Image (cartoon, rainbow, N blue to C red):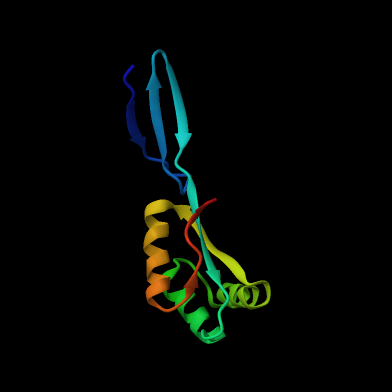
Length: 108
């Protein structure tokens, strides 16, 4: 049994979908989203975390970055972004290069 996969553009969703054709039925499945999690550490300052988040995470405001920095400090970690794998990999690597302590990417 062969299966064909085609990508369908999704304007209303951050996560693309795939169509799998099997025999006579069509099943639409969403690609999974991934979480970017920043971990607390003893060397990054609040200001550095805020600046890094606002620089590399699209749409991140200073106020939201401040809330996340507080959460990282007091709870040990915070989810700073959720979305498709390719974008998650990019943002994750940029945050690592900027010096933040990161958890591995994980499915949302």
